[in-house]
Length: 263
Image 1 (cartoon, one colour):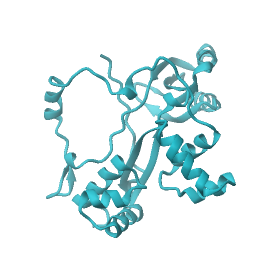
Image 2: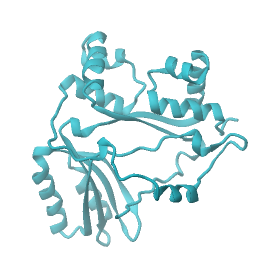
Image 3: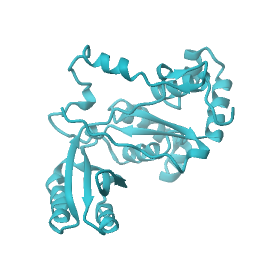
Image 4: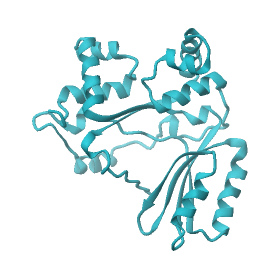
């Protein structure tokens, strides 16, 4: 059982994605389990699997716009292209990628009043001849996909993919987007410094304690709790909780795949 999930594990992971890792008592109540059982299973998942829990900030309410950058490198310029894209401090994530040719994939969160400056930065890279093609895809927020019992077969303890059913569902889905995917009239920053620091720490590890955050800031734990409750949560500064899990022995072999669909 060391490298396999069972149905209870998947139910807990699904609930953590909905209610967050700070609400184990609520999760236990929803699942009809004891809080200690839920806590032990989360500890087991952390020990036997590569389990990551982090929050996704709602960048729109932080005055930030999200940009996906796809850049294909000129021959022999792959490392230099990566280094040039890496130096921009607006980066959230950047990696090498492989497709029709070698290049880089980056996610940047840019203050709304620095959009022109960021576009000029990318234009300079393009004009330098480092890339044969560079695309900027502006986005609002990402809809993360967490583990769900709908995609898990408890009898075989394996994941299932109902592609035909999903395709059939498309014909009956509405066209109204969730609010996180709708461009707002303005990108207003609703956070102060303490809010941003809390979100930064939770983005790295959603299970970090308020005590640890308070020690890093040299403030009282009560201040962190109040800002989290009254600012971060009430102002809608967090979009969702991301749950990522994979067997430890596959940690170095998994590859993220990026799909770009045009409608």
